[in-house]
Length: 204
Image 1 (cartoon, one colour):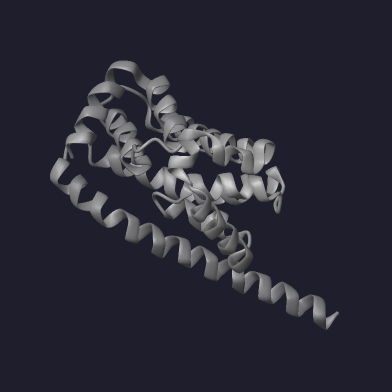
Image 2: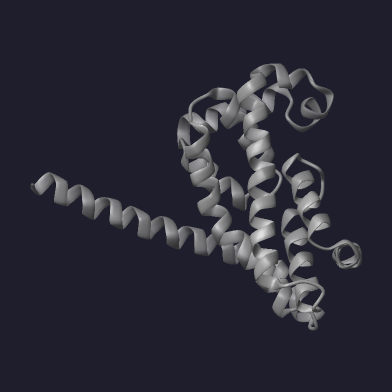
């Protein structure tokens, strides 16, 4: 919670721009937890420094911009990125090979679920771009669908827990599991709708 308090103080002083820039750094692989950053943005809204709905919009753009930046770097520079020192530390060749294997096994679903896997997101997005197996717009769609679940969740959690820090701390600890359940429910609904549509097409 010390990190959360420091972020709250910094964001309260600098507003939306600070939150946006912090999320860009999260997307770039900086060891700054994205969920804590989003919660801190929600807390300053709950303390009336900013508007919470505007904060949700700003954080959505910040998250997607950071993710898209990593995808586009991977798409443009490919495996040459692995020679850059910051990227080499984040994703050595062995890890890149593992990410490629995961794409082979799980396909585009990996880009959706990467949003709920702290520590893996940046590696997944760079690999998605470098492998050229998915278009930018499909990547943005999948990442955006996942962000629509996670970003409002964390921001509104911070907003409603702004003056209840013990309660907030408890739900931050539970939050990742809650998001996994929500993502799983969305996936089940999507699969049911896809199955029904397929049956209709087969019957015609």
